[in-house]
Image 1 (cartoon, helix red, strand yellow):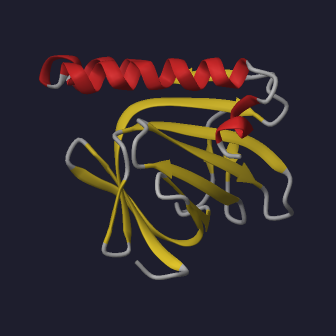
Image 2 (image 1 turned 135 degrees about the vertical axis):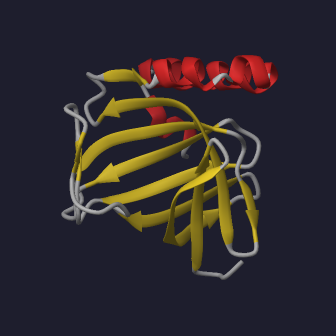
Length: 161
């Protein structure tokens, strides 16, 4: 692993969804944190938030937890909120952070007023509960854990300290 640069590789259903370069912020041995600009082309408007060129993501991946937490800010540093992916624990090897997306997501707005569970229909349709019931149970538990943490006074920042 380079001391400053890594590649994040996000897979879903056995296919690479996206790969992008990121700068290492910290590695505690369990949590690895990186910073990267919005990696997709153009604007992605979800209705509750827009990701767009210039946005900066500080992303936190764990080697032992079934999720990733991504703090999203504008290029000017204004916090938009946190986008959380439910994933298998991250694997870091050969300068890459390998992450498998398990469909479930959580959005938490900057002021904490919106906590949205996302893509539960995609998760149900994925068939994971039949093909890997243990992973499916971990995924649901991870989403519940993130949603509960988002409701706490310290919010998701408590996971990042």
